[in-house]
Amino acid sequence: MTGPKSGLIALPALAVMLFVLGGASPPAKLLRNLKLTSVSVDVPQDFEQLFPEGPDVESVNTNCRACHSPSMVMVQPRLSKAVWEKEVAKMITTYHAPIPEGEVPKIVNYLSSIKN
Amino acid sequence: MIRHDAKSDSRLSRRKLLAGGAIGAAGITALPAFAKSLVARPPVANSVVDLGLPNRPSQRALTSEFPGKREMILQRIRPPLLETPLSAFNQGVITPNDRFYVRWHWNEIPGQIDAATFRLKLHGHVEREIELSLDQILHGFERIEYTAVNQCSGNSRGLFVPPVPGAQWGHGAMGNARWTGVRLRDVLARAGLKPGAVDVRFAGLDEALLPDAPKFRKSLAAEHAMDGEVLIAFAMNGVQLPLLNGFPLRLVVPGWYSTYWVKMLSDIEVLPRKDDNYWMTKAYLVPKAPFGNVAPGVDDYPKEPISRMVPRSLVTNLAEGQRVAAGRPLAVSGIALGGDCGVAKVEISTDHGATWRMAKLGEDAGKYSFRRFDLAVPVPAAGTLPVTCRCTNTAGVSQPLAMNWNPGGYMRAGVETVTVIAGGGA
Image (cartoon, chains in turn blue, purple):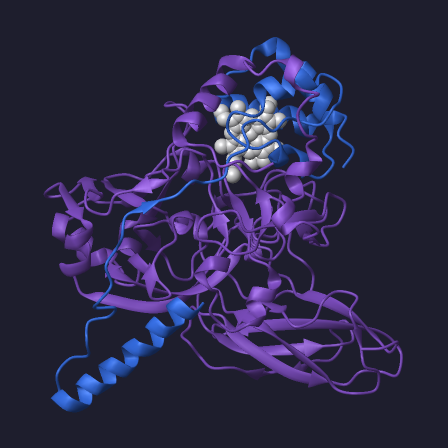
């Protein structure tokens, strides 16, 4: 927090100084010395992360890992089969997950077996 | 396991995943069990927190592996969901950038952004389409700044009872920062709204995985966009924004939930009609009722896009189940927000809301900021002590005593209680 904090303290002080020295002149431009620097970072990924063992685990491993970590699924509260069916349908219709229709019952079978 | 993939590797992995299981069943048993991804790697071993989430997995790893971030609660690696530990809220009114929570919807987030070639584009129902460089934004407009709370619509969803699907956050999907930037109004004026402008739509550099899937976009009504308060921020707490919080530009919509605070803002489109995109009309809807409250099981009620925040308060210096000295005053302190206006008062109850005592408010950093509160409360000789705090905002709206609920898990704002134990060593 030292960086941001010192910046914050310095500016009002500077503004007050200029104000006092210059009479009615406007306060110094906020963060006048700020320069934006290009950024290059690696954001952690977990594409190799699989679902824990369970019935039809291959089906969720194949169809439910492209857009988000398996943890998106595994930290959910225990949900009824009907709610899981709705979730899978949502992934397909709204987010365009390319899931063959025949896989849906297997996926729901796995999801309903999660003991949260 | 968290891995730092090179960008090209990530693309390849995604393609494989979409192609349907190029990573075959053969590899499955050889790879680490899922549980290991929630528990962090050796440098931060043993650091697991329990968020106290009822009826669902409650433990999360702490991680320091994300760029620009110190220790954060790992909610999801991909796309990143990182929660601010409650301890960060106990250290002052500002949330440091390296503890500020992170929330993305799609994983196509650029890791490289060139400040020299970045452009913000304004187009649609405007007099002239324009593209602005960062230099033009920093030096071509009057700068303003203020302190404001940024809170995820689904903050505290992990505490919803009955539970609802979605990110299972504790209370740390929020933060308070000093935002510096230029008025959205001034930037829009440069392009010139044509008569009949209805909505202004914002999008960032992040992309949906598939081209026809809904890219994340949010809109404000044209009058709101032109109110002179909404900011295009280029600095957060005095320095450029961390990439994961939206470098180089982020929309700041004070008093409104974070879903509107579009990160890596690169595209502003003026519309001559209401925006009908998925993220405005299907996602982030709340019941049209005070505090977005509806009874569980009730299905047909009018809905509206989530908008203004409501008052909240949290005790930040006490942990659930903590032992405290018996028979001596206990210092209670925490943070409050008014929502879409300032904090008028915070009261504390230690008897489940039967009686309330007024807490002392800390420095006023502006109506959109967190405000600290403090109070010493008497502690009995033995037994448990429920400590409840309640904020009332300057519009006279108080946090409800009964917890609000809705199926989206949005707008949690009822009073929160932390229960401590008197005696037995403090």
